[in-house]
Structures are given as C-alpha cells and as structure tokens.
Length: 114
Length: 113
Image 1 (cartoon, rainbow over the protein chains, first blue to last red):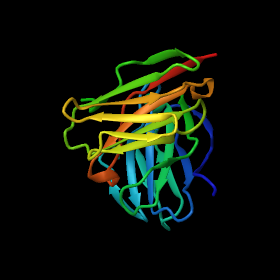
Image 2: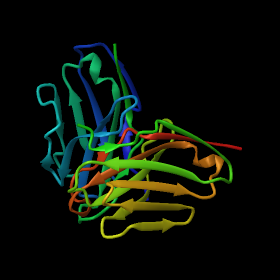
Image 3: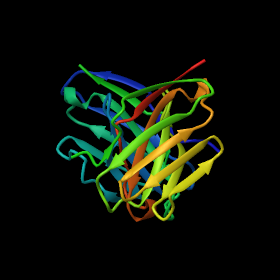
C-alpha cells in the first residue's frame, strides 16, 4: 500500500513570495490533515478535511494560508504572501475517516523563508 | 497553553536497557492517546496508542501506561535498540480519535550501542 505522498520535499523562497504544497493521501482515506511543525515543536493542525469538506480550520491563518481538496482526494496548501515565521515542515496526514483511527503521515515539505 | 507536555527534550540510554518516555496532559477531555516516532527527514510514524478506558497497552517491546488521575502517560521500550533512536511525540485527542490530535514537543531518544 502506497503511503502519503507530498511534494516538493524542500522549498526555499523569499518573504512576500507565494508557495504551494501538494499532498496525495493513502487511497481510500476520506480524512486529510495539514500540519505545521516548527523546529523544536510538535506538529500543529492547520486544517482537516473530510472528503472535500472542511471539518476544522480554526488554527489556519486565513489571511495568508489557504487549502483545498476539490475532488476529495489530493490537496493543495498555499501560503501567500509568506513570512519569515512560516519557515517550518508542512506535514500532510490521512486517515480512513470512519472513527477511532490512526493518522498516517507523509514525509513533509521543509519550507525556508528568507 | 500547552495541553500536552513532554518535559524531557532528550533521553540517552544504553542498548538493552529500558527507555521510559513521559508525557503529561492538562485537558481532562482527552480520551485517546498516541505515540509517534519520527526519524530525520521523515514524517511521524504511528507507534502505539491507548484508550482512556485502559491503563496499559502492550505491543512487542513497546508498552504504554496511562494514569488518568495524574494525567500522565509513559512509553516503555524494553529492550532498547540503536534503531529506536528517534524523536518520540506524544499526542492526545477527544472522542476516541475522531477529533484533532494535539502533540507534545517531542523527546529525542538516543540508544547507545
């Protein structure tokens, strides 16, 4: 079974530029999560999708971050414009979406904002 | 306010000995707890979990203990192996896992040969 795929693995941009990350969850998984992990911290949930609907985006900085999962499969997370404090690893995870269950993480995208 | 706390940033043990990683939480609504293991440049990998209706769950060399009255859980690895060297994250959630995970900051475990 293929795991969660993410691209790119690394990205370096200058502040005020925009950037997008892509995630393809495990086949058949209804729930998709985007996390931000700042160095020395644990992952923090940014947004959770159930199929193509948003379940929780309470910690998403909506003035600069956006995410979509149009067809209920893969997802894109965008930052526009980026700030220095957005430097972090962005992790995508998925789970079956049927109840008590484990989240499976992708390798992450490491973003550096200069 | 940090709801899940891992107060030891790092832990070093000898191969073959026991590793004990600790985690404390403040939200009494948490009812499902998980441990994830993370190697450099990889995403976290699920290790073991425990529901609040239990006080112990065991899977091979890994055992998680839950003390609800103290709002404390621990992960025991016996015997420790060099391949166990990684960052271990404690995570908690409500409603049996259907709600969002809240992670601790992680503990870096080093197992010396």
